[in-house]
Image 1 (cartoon, rainbow, N blue to C red):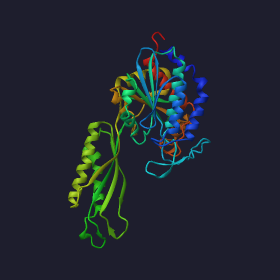
Image 2 (image 1 turned 30 degrees about the vertical axis):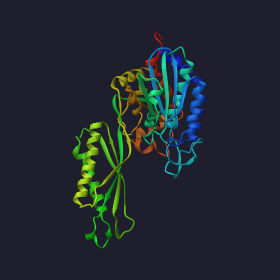
Image 3 (image 1 turned 135 degrees about the horizontal axis):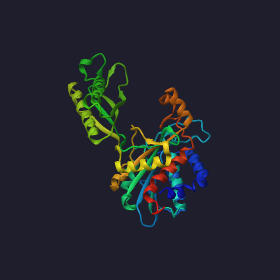
Image 4 (image 1 turned 90 degrees about the horizontal axis):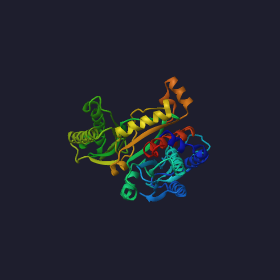
Length: 421
């Protein structure tokens, strides 16, 4: 397989400048979820020029390109395209100055603060190399550019638009994400990789009154405070110490005056977990605890629970992850390792799950290696290095892009390499 990988990667030097130019332009022109019209048009145009069979407009702005080279496995690879409502503070010469109207009608700044511009650029570089090296592989490549990953609805939007009926069923599916590790780093792990995430809004009902007459009220602020305290025991006292989970209450809203007890209070919270059993246990406990506190406060109405966003857990197929770990270590040497469990969340797994296909998701580094090493030496990695979603998040262009392209090639070619290569 080594010769086949080398044959594909031999064209990397020829396209490096174009990939970097595309990356800088995309970083300067970010678009929010389901509004990635410029990005998807530029992606589709390039894939079409390179001979891919294109389906665009999937789920609104999603793009899929299919390239076949005879009989063989089908490999699907996904890149997410959307940016975030963040005002950029990187100081880069190609920094975003974009503002736009979001889906709620609010004017917001926009930035590729999560690295999806890296993902798209690497995928296009990969797609170009595979199109050129036609004799090095056999099978079918499906490159999928997904909208609205940040909102957790892009994968399902493409599935609802008939994705599984419009592209070949893959034998394996891959995705990667740039993370605040040293650039050049590649990390994979079997099993749980990213957490599930559920965000809820809970409305608590009381009975309003004058602040001087609390006996006439059911105070929803006190009820909210009791819920906050009680919910802190769900993870610490209802889960085994070996179970990983996080429950965060990120917002409390109630009242508008210091001498008025309001009628309602609202909590917004987020839950992170790594398996469906733990996830269900926590969500059930939240409802049980909040309802019990409402009853204890003699609330006039049952609390209302609204799901704001939900992301599935990302759990890599063990055999696929082991196979990739082997080929990554063979190609990247000491730069390939087993990555730590991540608390971020993704909707990528919805796609291979819909096909019934095993998948593997891995991370690549994007931080300047010298800067990372210095922060590590001082013990200030968490304090000194901007992470995804930060206004200062700025992956170094190289070797980040080369590493991402190479990882996609190495992974895919372990399935697609021509026999005898």
